Image (cartoon, rainbow, N blue to C red; front, side):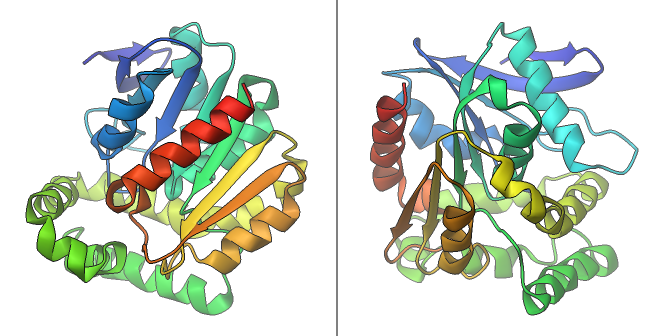
Length: 264
């Protein structure tokens, strides 16, 4: 898998399949491997690119504080490096926030946008909850919230029946660089407030998905985004929590394929 310097940013990425480009952006604390189910399925139809965002996996971990625009610039530079003029951009959780700002700053480079399990316009109570997790990481280290995160992300039945998947996610979270993780988490904790007044500027076809039981990226947030975006579709998937691309991969894959086909 190539790890290359794109202008000033070292980025770890992987490409499979042929056809229209589809680029996936993972969530905070994860890396490109969370998209394995989507890559395997969609690469039969499209040119699929997955990569590690700044501060994650094998990509660069700058010493400076991160801003959301840094992640947008990384995506733009990766597209330039791969000679991609336009792509279907799919972002999960924090990746969805990056996709939102990308759609605002680079509307000519996105055919569609998908915001999956993505926060928007957190209430004061929700802001306090996410900042309490930031403080926990600052005081106790990046491994402190892992158990609670996995419980919040996956249904109990899935955790019991797929221990190997849960262990892989746990290891990914444990292996994060602690300083980079904290800096990325601070962006995740605040970016929705930065983006909310700007969302209506997005005029690209957008798919908004979340799990009905997702307590962080809630159905209400998805509905509010849907109301803001003129060309959006909304899917609330019953039963699932936050980690929809993994636990609900079959549903996600079919929904993505249908949406991209319709807008190709």
